[in-house]
Image (cartoon, rainbow, N blue to C red; front, side):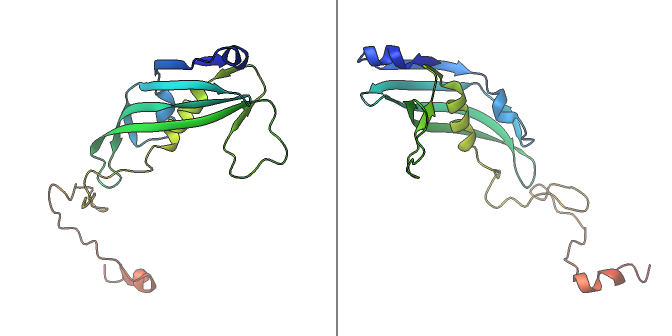
Length: 168
């Protein structure tokens, strides 16, 4: 998924990319992501007269993540809208804070790292199988959504925690 500034400046037609990318980057460093489908990218790059390219499109990704409370698998579908402005040349020293443009010195630009970053930024930090998920018992590990347990999980006043085993 590459384009060249020089070729885009000579053409008034946008370049369209419809590709499927490996989603291995999604699971990197995340133990809660059980599986991920390939990333489907539908992206259009259009040259502007001010040596900038507007990149717009959508990314689609299907994931299976573990519930943050009970570890049950949860299926997710992500539709990520991508909007990037890529400028040719070095980044100016006094760039405005609200300027979100990406500055690239080379003539050839590979879009894949920007698409991967957009997908990662849209991933949820955690998911729940349902809003009222009870989670796992911290003592015996039983899934409290499926059955109750007889464990005593009342919070202990930390000032009296030392007396807990006094009569044993």
